[in-house]
Image (cartoon, rainbow, N blue to C red; front, top):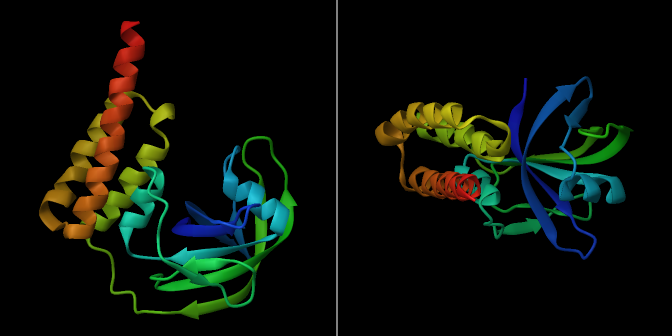
Length: 191
């Protein structure tokens, strides 16, 4: 099972890098497997730690994929890093083992601190649709246009029926990214 989270790491210059990332449990470890190239991967290989943030604010996922990186942060408890201020919960991890791969290394991370900050009240269908669309946007370059279009049409049903202001804003950002990608494809095809 993959859980969609937001991972925060510290860049070499000290700023906090924020990235959506699916994680898995593997025994006593949390497994992170970012694709190369990846700022998150570089930061975790250098510092050997990260913070896994659990949030129901889908704007963070959509925002990070569309160039919106400024989200409120606060210091982590046991590592030199930061967590999302509005996270429902977070887990601070140390990278204990790296299984190298040229495309997608596997980082086995041991939790060293976990905290709950607010109750999880469940996702509405629009939040789930935004998460699916965010994954789709992260893979635009890998998927045929017809698949992208049909997925968006289906996901849009949940947005129209159940979205609140946060989900509408996140959806708008993602659809702008899809439109820009499609326009770029058309321009390249006409050259």
